Amino acid sequence: MTTESALDTALSQLKQAVSQLGLSENDWQTLSTPRRVLEVAVPLRRDNGNVEMYRGYRVQYSTTRGPSKGGVRFHPDIDMNETVALAMLMTWKCALTNLPYGGAKGGIAVDAGSLSLAENERLTRRYTSEILPIIGPERDIPAPDVGTDERNMAWMMDTYSVNAGFSVPGVVTGKPIVLGGSLGRTSATGDGVAISAREALRVRGINPQGATVAIQGFGKVGYWAAVACEQMGMKVVAVSDVHGGITGFSSIAAVWDHFKANGNINVPGSEKLTNDELLHLKVDVLVPAALADSITEKSAGGIQAKIVVEGANAPTTPGGDAILKENNILVVPDILANAGGVIVSYFEWVQDKQNYFWTADEVKQNLNEILMKSVREVEAMSEAKNVTWREAAMMLGVGRVAEAHKLRGLYP
Image (cartoon, rainbow, N blue to C red):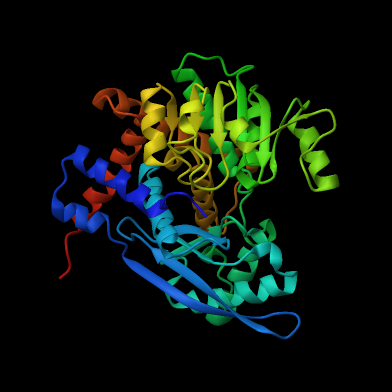
């Protein structure tokens, strides 16, 4: 379980942005309230015949700028408050990167690792059928998140399509390529983290070539971020997973090969670290790419990195954030740093709607273009208003949603 409420953290960041933007109490009431919240019971027939009940969620935080967009998470610790918080962050992230979406999030409180393949499929399909009335390519477009992958998206797409009576590939993103997925989607979030790290190094006057990077988390975000950082010339000196970390390895490829063969990252010849020790390494860039609340009031004081690039959603608590600011550590916030995933999800949705697909190079070029524009806007806002990058990113994202609300008006 997280040590602080993700919803409290998200609301605290929103309240600060509302104050800095000079928005009204009416604006606060509108921006701090999710548009639609759904909790469902998800029954699962286990392989042994027993029936178990799980709680499922789907939160559509905003639809002001377009259909809502957000991942589906299978994790035992998720609850409604966390789902609302993550949907809120998705709202500001989509607005910050100027995607025509609102934010959403969903999931089931279940340990995906405890499910057989057949159980996972049955649970995914039943969850999809329960949230079916509120999702769709023009309403709400789910995507993979913690504990889910392209296989789950294939099952969700098929379940929706069977009920529609025809194939609807645009109902989800993060699908297999043969079902309308996009090239570059798997690595997109990690690619975006690496782009953000490169630009933050530029701002701090540090040459990316040979800059040292420590990455907490070796999942879908952490691994691909490590690969992309190496391709850009940075030196990844430490990585970790839930069991702990290592340093002293030759390359990410060597760690990955060992992981595939042995199921762990303990490469022979490497030195073991705890996750806390990894956080406190003296490196140029620290990437928290695990779950929320890695950097707290307790752990932030020992961070020696010059730059923190948030690969995970809400990895820094307000108390931890204040310490990083006091220590002059540049933080690239999650709504900017990990936006690569939703940007390429948008590309997939566009390709599905057009039935015309792009090359991998086109995807990477367009991702770089959109993310670089957002980085420049955050940098400019930070300098103009003398605020942190997190505050600048929140002001841009929240400001755009508030403006859209104002222009659309209140019905009736």
